[in-house]
Each structure stands twice: as structure tokens, then as C-alpha cells.
Image (cartoon, rainbow over all chains, first blue to last red; front, side, top):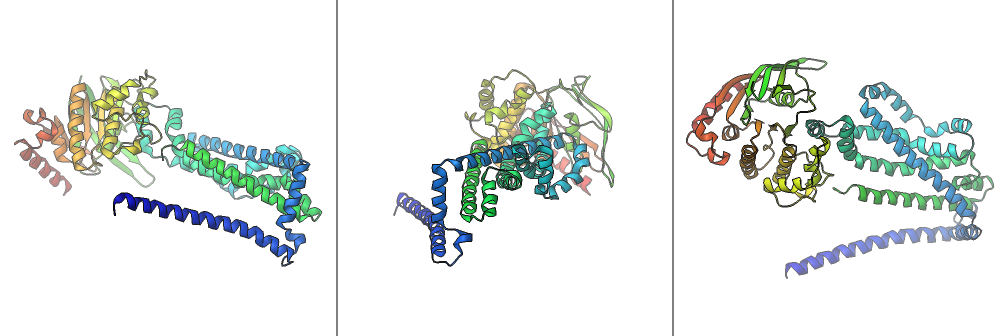
Amino acid sequence: MNIKELHLQYKKRLAKEKRWIKFYQLFILVGFFVLWEMASSKRWIDPLIFSAPSRIFKLLTNMVSDGTIFIHINYTLFETVLGFILGTLIGTILAAILWWFPTVSKILDPYLVVLNSMPKVALGPILIVALGPGMTSIITMGAIISVIISTIVIYTSFRNVDANYLKVLQTFNATKWQMFKEAILPASFPTIISTLKVNVGLSWVGVIVGEFLVSSRGLGYLIIYGFQVFNFNLVLMSLLIIAIFATLMYQLVEMLEKRLIKNE
Amino acid sequence: MSFLVVEHVSHTYFSKDAATEALRDIHLTIEEGEFVSFIGPSGCGKTTLLSIIAGLFQPTYGNVFIENQQVYGNKELSIGYMLQQDYLFPWKTIEENITLGLKLLNKHVDMSIASKLLQDVGLPPVEKKYPRELSGGMRQRVALARTLAVDPKILLLDEPFSALDYQSKLKLEDLVSKMLKQYNKTAILVTHDIGEAIAMSDRIYLFSARPGKIHKVFDIPEEIRTLPPFEARSHSSYSPLFQQIWKELEHLEH
């Protein structure tokens, strides 16, 4: 047997393993919905509370055909994406300020700890009073929930950049801004991307809670409305849509990661 | 006045618990085109002195001048610094790494300089590759090219060969020595390796530790100085000198 054949066999084994994994993943997905449908129709679970895939699908087709669902998805998606971008961007800018002024960072250290430990959604009522019961409050919720933790994580990464890179730049008489641009920021891109991944989830929490509190539109509103009128088809449908879009956002961040971090 | 003057430099590090005297009254001069080495036991402040010469920070006492200009806070002087590891920026291509210094110093960046320097340091055209695609020896050659690109007044070499395998190390010693002669550069090498110091330098400063002081100065005989490092190691005068420095160093460590 020659090397080429062995290599071919090895590749076949890999492909086979991959096929099995895909199969099981699909199996779990299909199995989950089939079981759910069955449990509901056979009354193992209460269909009034837990609904059923067929009911959800019917509701969805109705809402798609009259177009109302797109209004809600658009609204929530816009708020989430904006909150997510703002949260990470402001977090990065704050981290840069802390890096630039070490004394400021020492002074603010305990306050950052306090702000980070505090449950941000508890600020919801204050935001609504201050910014009005509208989109601004909800976007702020989406941003505020991730901004402090982003600041802390990214600032730690800025500080942990190998000092020898800075030494190299210093011998070239680099200014502080050049050191930031050439070493500190690019060396921290992997950390910034991983905060982005965490922030995808956090922003959804902020926005959905925000919509619970004030909104008259959006997926969070549909959930709270469905709950109030005891229409759990609506609640679970909104939940499924959120799961799908949150996953898509995560995938987008991963694509960004591949483009931005070429060297690994 | 000499090309480089280190004028009665002392330096003390302060921490909450202690004040550690790293250097005491270092006074030395180096002429243009000379190659000198600093050796000594660990903790003798060699690297501290190198950083002070590079103008990275100000010594507690004393001054350093290159061509009569103070080095600390001097934006006009360009200094080449090579470290134990290459510290190439992993997110920049080889070309971008080599021209980084030029870019930062606002000099005209001609990308062809990268190709020329790569050739000079004996590398194939790898301009568009990333550092991770090169071996340790190749990366250190790129680091040398990056240092030479800005045409520095002086090269400071902080154990640049210590992380390499023995063969790469010997080859790189010859290369650095050849290139410094070719460009008529002044250089200071910090090393633990007595053989390397003898083979490469015109003069060796032996430091004693705690606090760092110049203990003894060895002038390398003409016949070794003129040879490339690899051949210098097999010259008949090499061994006795090695023994002499070895004994001094032994003596210091006890």
C-alpha cells in the first residue's frame, strides 16, 4: 500500500466522520420539533402553554402574509445591531482613554467594578424616564448592558500587550498615538472580536428587556403582549425568531473575525 | 570628543519595598565604527545600560551623548535596537515590518528598500509573507533588516542570537558582523556568551554585579578582530583569551 492510498483513506475517514456529525445535528433538530409536535397533539404537554410547531408555523405564515412580522423584526434588529455596535465601540474608546491616562484608570478602578457588578437592566426605568419611552431608551439599554464589561476586558488586553513591541516602536521615536495604532490596538483585535461575540448575546438581552418595559413594536413586545393575552404561540414564535437572528449575528461576527485576523 | 560617550552614568530602580542600585558610575567612550560587547553575570545591569544608551529612559545620574547630542528625549537620533526575540509584528507583512521604522520616522518609504535589505541579509523574496511563515533564524534576519532600514547611528544588540539554534546563531553572527562593517556602523552587543563576544568585538567590557560596574576591559587582538566571527573562533589567540575572561567571570560570580 502506498502513501497516496493511505492519504486517500484518511481523507475518506475524515469526510465520513463529518457526515455523521452533520447527521446527528440534523437529527436533534428534526427530532426536537417532531417530539414537540407529538407531545402537544397527544396532550403530554399543555398545548395552551407550550404551543406546537404546527401552530407556530401557521401563525408565522399569517403574519408573513400580512407583513406585520417584518415590522417587528426590523424594529428589534435595528435596535439590537445599533446597541451592539455602540456598546463595543464606546467600550473600546473608554478602554483607550484608560490606557492613555493611567492615573485616570487608577482613580476609576473601583467605580468600574461597581458599575460592572450592578445589573444594568435595573437602570431601565430610569432610562425610560430620562430618554422617553421610545427607541432611544431601548438602544441605550442594548448598549449599556455591554459597555462596561467591554471596557474592562479590552483595557486588560491593552495592558497585556508585550512591552517589547512598544520598546521596538520607542526606538523608532514613535509617538503615543503611533504606539496605540501600530501595536496596542492590532494586538488586541482578537480580544475585541471575542467581546463582540459576547456582546451579541448581551445586546439581545438589553433590547428585549427594553421592549418588555416600553415598546409597542418589536419581538420583545410580541413576547410580552402574547403573555398578557395568553397567546403562547406568539411568545414561542418570537423566541424562535430571536434565536435565529442572534445566531446569524454571531455568524457575521465570526466572518468578520476571519477577515480581520489574517495572521493566525 | 568620541562618537559615543557614556558619562558617569548611575541608575537606581525604585519600588515600594526597595531601591535597587543597578548601575554605578559607568564611564566609557566608543569610537565610530567600533564594535564593543558588554558581558557579565546576570543582574549586572547590562540591559539597563543598553536601554539608557537607547534613550528609552533617563538615568538617575549622568548623561549619554552620541556625536555630542544627548540621547534621552532626542527625536533626531535614530537608534537600532535588536532584542532576544525578533518582535516582528505578526499582523504586518515582512515588507511592512521592515519599513515600519521609516514610516514612523516620517521618512520617505520606498518599498523597494525591503527587497534590497532582504537580499542583503541573505533571505529569498518573502516581502508579502507574514512572520509566522518564517523560521526563527529568518525572522531574526528580518528584524536586522528592519533595524538597518532606518540607517541608525548606532546598533544596540541585546542578546539577539540567544534564542536561536547553534547553527543559525553562528551564521547570523557572521552576517551581522559583515553588514556592520559594510555599512560602517557602531554597535554594542550584550551577551552571555564569551565566545560570541570575542569573535565579534573590538573590545569587551566585563561588568560586575550588584551594583553594575565596569570590572575590566579587554582589547581584542588585531588578528582576531579582522576575521569573521566563525573563523575567529578557530584562531590560535582565541582560546587563551577565552580562558582569561572565563576565569575573571568565574571569580566575579563567587
